[in-house]
Length: 582
Image (cartoon, rainbow, N blue to C red):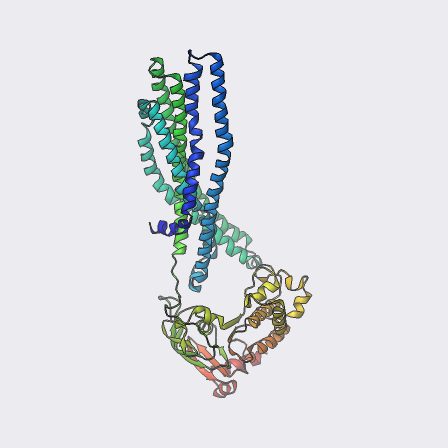
């Protein structure tokens, strides 16, 4: 029920439009309901009326036809257009609002959520399931009420024509209720299972397309295709289970529907034979019988559609109800002064409650303008420690402070706005080179973009590209080399101009020429900033003001290059090994 309340928030702004559409729909559906009455009048009062002359019959017939033509052509055409337009306008706007809200929600979910969720699964809910929910408005809030209006109108007309014959016609209606109650409960579960299986296909496909180079390099095409076949077969099985139950539902409903006309023909024909029912009334009644069971069938179909839409709504709202791990405190303040010092005070951290501690009682002070390097074996906690500064994760014990203020008491936007990050594998968006540099500051001018590229040693290679700054880089920057992507990533950090610079393995995967160009850019970028460097190649951080050695989530050594070499501990051993390898 909470899902429906949540969904109504998106529909509420369009309530007046829905009411207007319903009124227009009543006119649209009401016009055809005049046909049986027109037919009754033509048969009883014109064709079979011996008191009227031939001329009178012809005159009145053309008058009736003229009025009907005006009603069905002049009036019904615009009404039909307006009804369709407003119905699609409302559903399109509701989907627009839902996707906007859902996208904002996805942006606020923590990195922990994305680490535990397949991207394709979230996309399936965002695209497929949201699209299915439009039937809740179009069918559930409009079509059903119009069909109910049609039923009431038709039943009223049928009772007016002949109450007893009407009771005969609706004698099977209780069977409809029983059929719906039995059949549609299971159909909802089968529909949700089908949606889940479809999301599985989308998640698998998204992941495999992203990793197609790995699949080909290990010649896994056949193995991968077998795995996809199994996932695809699972979807087929779920889809066929839903199809079988759906087919059974329609078979039962249509069989029940076909019984009613036979009952009316039998009883109505008997009354006509005994002259207790006019032919015109019988013909009109049979015309209304079709208009009774047509909306009734639509209502049954609506149950199927709404069952599917309800299953999709549950999946959408499950995503929308996903809680935020990290939120601003109610009294959070902006980091109004430039970020200078960073302090880790007794920091304990793990990624989930059941996991092991990744950081254990870390204490570290970084002063403004310092360059601090973090070294150690993989898994020591270096990148985890860095990720706490922009508050990608929250710690369990201790505090992380900027300018003496706990980051949990500052707004995330202001904290993250003061931090610029250059990673080993920087993500480039599909679009142009210029678009990707503008990530650092979307409001920057072309001159500022160019200046940032020059400072990142990227301008020369950009100008050699086919369209310069307007060259499309492809998905994830696939059209560029690793060094080129890295320089664009550095250019956007130049454009951001942050107070704190984080370099996480920024040059470890590059060739020597690219590394040299990037090291020059990074040296320029880190000037007059607080810089934190995570590095495996120790020769690149000997200039650091502090070198912090991390092992098993703890700081085991700390000092300058000279001081740590003099100690002869882990850092010295690792440096000597790398120096010998070179």
